[in-house]
Amino acid sequence: MKQVYFFFSFLIVFSYNLHSQQVLFDEYSLLTLSESSSVEKKLNEIKHLTGVDICCYIAKSLENKTPEAYTLEKGNTLKIGLPGINNAVFIMIAPLVQQLYITMSYGVQWIIPDQKTESLIDLMTPFFRDKKYCDGILKGLDVMEKDLSGFSWVPVKIDIKKTDLSRFVGKVITFEYTYKPDKWKFKHPSTTDVEFDKNYKIGIYNDTRKIAELFYSKYMENMVNSILTSPAIKIFARVRKINPNELELLGIQ
Image 1 (cartoon, one colour):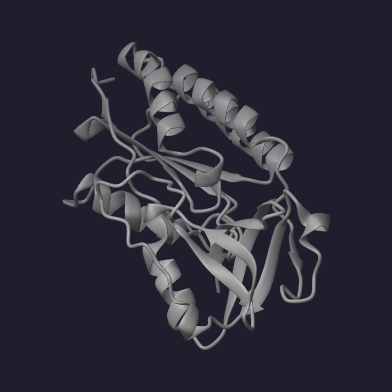
Image 2: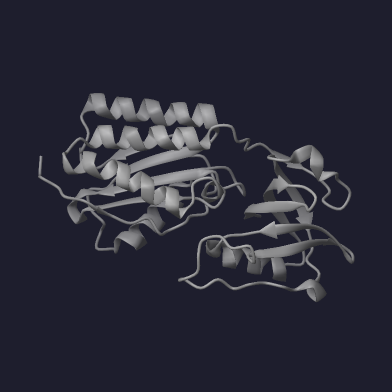
């Protein structure tokens, strides 16, 4: 096997749509059959225990694409995670260009933000440099399993204007919504801004009364634009807290 030295990045966030049954792709034959079995078993265990889809993709070639473009294309082609909820993680290892990308879909980034992803990469790096690839992957998966445990991903359909949100704290809700043009307030994040900010939010209204504040990350600008410009849209969000009511945006349909 070639000696491979790795450096790392993780800046792409995907919107995943459908569930993919295959969880491990090893085009490079980086893992032995026994190691592949161990990784697949762990990936399926995490899916069963947490409800989150994690896909590990070991690429033989980036097909003359940049690592960013290849990761974006593969992540969206494989389509893992639930529609609208975006509960998926994509791990892409490209030995020939010495790259590892760990990307969180919109729903998961609330639980594992950029800073935690950096820590995961730092944790896995020594194993990869020692060519203990399976150990590195499993170590990262152990941490992700711990972080992702205890969260529900089953959406409850509600009428946002009539429902007492105190019943759904920590739960995923979905609701139809038409934005009020006169309530337009939207902070446009820049690429240098932090991932989360107290000002990344829009109000959810019942006529003139604010029902809740819907928080988003800097990666969700296009999604928020759709909410603000669509005559009607389905929103998926997790109820963060009540009094005041705060929601975390997961996705739209």
